[in-house]
Image 1 (cartoon, rainbow, N blue to C red):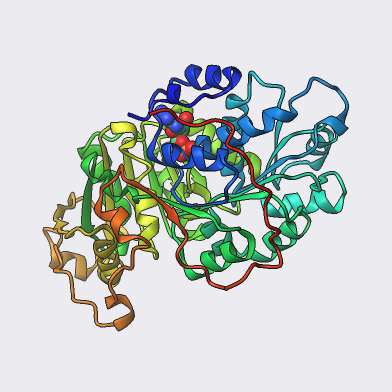
Image 2 (tube, helix red, strand yellow):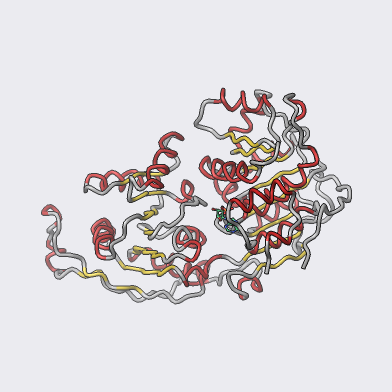
Length: 462
Ligand code: AMP
């Protein structure tokens, strides 16, 4: 039993944790908190939704309490912890959580991301903040404007690092990291440990402890996964039909492109469904409003792309639709992880057209499950313009179960390489801590300075 009470958290942190209703630590928390407290670097394979934010922020706050003070002087509140995230929504979400954990302390937390006026952010930074949560681009703006001074940073968290690299933030990250003191604690969290992530880790982390929480592909126990073979043209109709048949009140609808996202949201809206779109081209204000409307239940369908939706913590979403099968099987796990959270029942519906079978096969390999297609009898009403000869011949129209064709491309035929097979085999709650075994370069990176030994501030009692 990994109870929070076993951790000798400072009373003002323990009080906040108790107020949040947390009793038992999640696997990533049980593994990471003691390691971060001991001052070691961490390379964590865990996704949002696993309790990762508390896993890194509670021990960091605990360590920073040594510098807690009530002074109004900004100089007494330098940035000591920097948390970098790929998207504005994630940055906002993580900052909100850290503020809750720190609420009974004197430690200040601020968030900066693009798409918003810099002035209020600048004013907040000038007052002094100990924890700065940021997206890379906007942080660089503040660094250039000299409103973010990072020469006293002791702790850096690279959160959703794989996604940051996917988006192309590597040069920005390298620049930001070059402004930081080399002697520091660095924590890197990523859904996967790709060679790029390992390279990043070997350049900026010092003897990190790897903590891996099995991917939540075991969410299958609470998430019913359904796959339908649907023609591109019929997807919208199928979506509406399933919503009705299964009496789904709210859902995320994932698409693969920004353009497709905007187009689908518009057409669902014109069909009378309360819909909002969430994608990277939306202004920050629009994105926050869409999320808020969804959370309040004013919007039933949130049509989104992966980048915009990654890690959003919205409780009780009854269903997720993969209107498009994701290009990357990992994204399938992220997407369906939006439903069936915290033991609730969820349904994940995926529409695959004939050209998606290879992607479906990737999902089979990653999730280690056999995917069977369910047949959907599409209601016969069709828009008159689409009553083509082809459609007539097809009637009654059936989205036929297509047998999964064996992939022929050797690349796609390659078995999925889990980063630690043992962690996967042990099931959803298993977490493994071990020393990193795959340093990409030998010797110490010029970006790293050996740490002073840090005495653990407290130990867990068993
Ligand atoms: P995260 O992965 O940090 O985004 O956390 C996902 C959700 O789990 C958030 O709503 C947290 O408030 C919640 N959470 C984090 N840790 C715990 C815990 N130990 N017990 C219950 N809920 C938690």
